[in-house]
View (cartoon, rainbow, N blue to C red):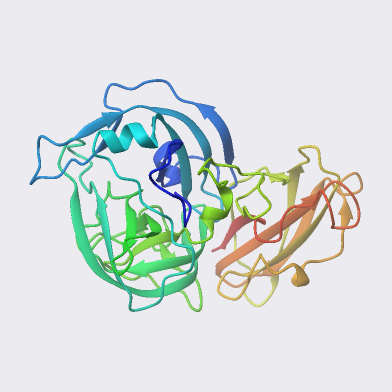
Length: 343
């Protein structure tokens, strides 16, 4: 729930979780889903299922996916069937979202179910400290901006979607989305083996990553109803042209350059701008670095050039309806991004 909401008032109740918990890890990296109706499930959504209170579990149904994506953030907001008052009557107390970012060194905790083999296993509670923020994390075809890093114990597969709390306030500061498992051998930056791309590439064994949610309260009205069209909501509006590939892998040209041509699905838009460069130095959310505006009618495939040395690069695209990069254009903080691997 948004900061400052009177939790005694009735209104719709929402579940905050990771986008991939609903869309799956096989979804497209720039995919956005709005207002998707859900069918009832026998297992539903289970609250208060801890080992020390086995009889207290409460199961409710989810009604609709209000927002879900793995584009830049790994988040989903799901409306539940019961209202806040009905949930409180069943012993389920809502939590408030943090209004400001958490700080390195803050005491934090998560509550989740890190056991994929037994979905009915009790939840666990783990506490630790926030270590740092990673400006960019890469995992498979996905990219995450400004991710919070911790080393909380027990955050194995299955803990994705768990809320991360600030122990000082009890507010939700983030949602767990991935981690590097201890002793698990894999290719760095692959699925289930994320890597921090900035300020330098590294894969940290045992690290867990959480998507920060401060500011998400701006997507709710005064009654606690989700409103993605609100002026203060910075969630992705899905204004974008879509590249045809989720990830680009090309052969290296050491000491030289690699030129790409990538077809774009217009999706009702007419113009675009691009930016490309090394993943460890590029911020696709900075509009000042983009090239000139191009009409898609003149260039239905974008042209981009990156260094030919082996490494990870990003291809960034911003698009809009018009030639002035103003109203009707993609928000600067939600660029479309394609990971390029030169090998």
